[in-house]
Image (tube, rainbow over all chains, first blue to last red; front, top):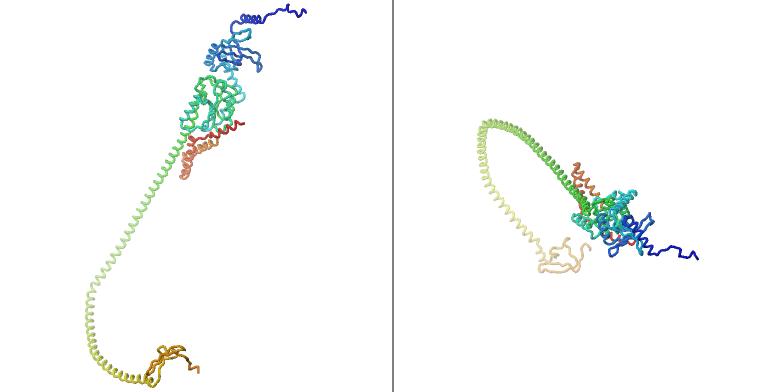
Length: 487
Length: 69
């Protein structure tokens, strides 16, 4: 019974305990102190205050945990500094150095009232993260992987990771469109800064990897905003993906100082999207120049080659002309000399012949008149003789003509007398031999075809006959006929 | 990808032809052949600067298909 008595134990009320703890704190830790912790969650409220959760982890194990409060005024001023110096807003999960007063509330318990958060510490932490990422990549041998990829002579088919309303993207597109060359682009939209960036970009890179045969390279373009929220580009997951990516990745995320890991390990870093555009345009310009150079070089060489050949041809033609002229001249001279020789020879012969003729004619000249006179004389004699012979002949002819006529006359008379005698005899004969005498005696003459019947003129039965006698001419037809030979 | 290879090859061949011509070691017949080939190659190379090579429809289709996976 006495053990259970509660009168001996010293006890306090809860409130007293609370008050006591409060007093202890006021005594021992009246001023705010700097605390290193992980800002697990910021928990910003609509009113602008934050109710963060702080952690300390060892490995994965939580070894300490505490709540806190950041009143709106402090929160605003802290954010401003962070944006200015760290270029990052306060982020869940980041290691921070906070200036806070430990408070004990009898109802809400321990909390840390945050007066300030050190931006430079945060900066340092980011740097640490960056270093850690680089180290990890180096250990995995990924640092230069993307940079060693081959790239097309003229990268033309571009997979662009950007935001549709990004000024950086707009600048890029304007620049390449103004170039006049044909670039084929396909936009893959993503968050390019802040908390969601890593996941968003990784998602798109995944998709692009599956379509890698359509593209020459990938561009990550960002620009126009401030340079806040870029620490995502130091994230190990994003950087590993970039390092391992099968296509060259070109970054233009606008970070002019303090390069991020992503920019360091990408195939190429153009810094700004416009600069990336110029990077891509340059090979096209060089290509175009080379082609133009080839073209003009070929034209030039053709031209000079052909000129050379045509000059040679002209030379040859000239030589041919000269040579042939020379030959023709030589031939002319030869011809001339031949001609001279011929003519000379001819002349000589001619003269020789002339001389001979002259001699002959001289000789003949002497002889011929004499010769001709004699001839003439002879001819005259001849003529005379011919004339006299003719006369003789003619007189003979006269004589004989007269005589002949007489003889002819006499002979003719004789003949006529004879004929007369003959014809008288003939008449008598005819008279005696004519059928008239026989007709008177009663004989008739039968004619077939107007002719007497003979071996050549033999009628047959049915043939017409004409019978003539002294008194009649009878037309008849044969009724019956018998050849005398048949009897 | 295969299309860019043909452009690269065209470029290489063109380069070679120009070198040959600069070498002056060429006959008139060869010349006309080379010039013909060169003008074909020049055409191909020039096209590279102005021709579209991306098949957007194909890409969209593939994206759709892979999303189903």
